Length: 144
Length: 97
Length: 133
Image (cartoon, rainbow over all chains, first blue to last red; front, side, top):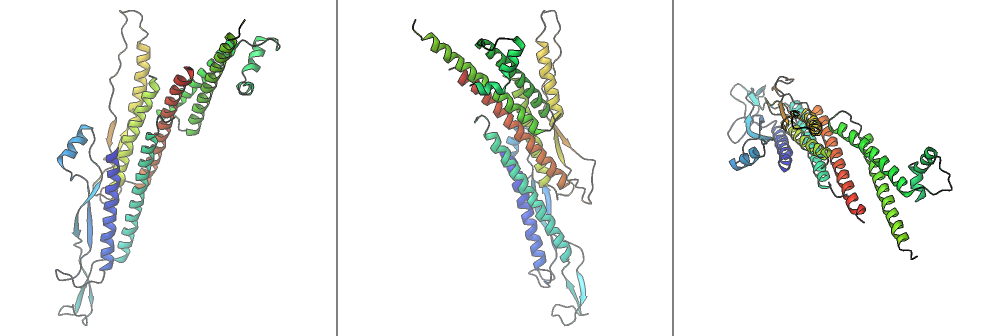
């Protein structure tokens, strides 16, 4: 039963990371200069079923007849959709024709994503609490 | 002691069924037997409901929990009657003739 | 021991396994390609209850020449992997609302069974303690 707590915990961690990424996107919505040079590219988390455990974990779980569960963010990738170009010749980062590449971050999309992440996070908190209730109740068996 | 027994409707039904004169004292063993069989009935009923709930055939939690409480109470009552009767018996046996 | 206690215990096990599958679904609500998992423990429980009945009946053979009714072996709970539905572009078929509802149901079922097992043990202890005085 304890490994079930890890499932919910992994979900909360993943959603939290997703929210951080979204916040970063929003913060950099106007960034035209990054460390690598060039305009900021929107970042996305890649969700995957959690498998990255040491072998001993798999062995013990298999012996109990269970598979590990939960989620992990296995990578943070950049959204390859094109930059938004605007015409702004007075900007220092504009190219020779006066066009400026702005980050491919759309505030509305990010907000919707943020709400979705928040909802998923809350759902997993509720799930964790329900598991806790069950465990506490099982503890009370036989206490009269 | 009389009040809880009344709530189970033991001596009311019992007297009518056996048309005993109320002045005669009821046999202790008969009270106990009646109580045990009622308790057994309630326990069987509660077990049936619990099994039905476990198998997903019913989903009324209140009904199942109340049935278990009734059975538990009946059991406690029967135990209490049993113990009191034994106490009374021992008390009587101690009377020096 | 009361066969009902065994049944209740199996019910608790099944409910816990189902709860775990639902937790996994909730954790992977955003995972592309993930298909929801479930555990069908009620059907196994029903078979177990039938098996209990069979055991009770099979003990009634009064002669060695009578044939014992076949009793099915204990089966593990069925793990389900629901593949054929998809309602999002990323092929994920987890619906948060449905999972939350099923989670609540499973939790209530578990809590009720735990309470009942507790009561059964309490009753047994009661009889042992008080009956012995």
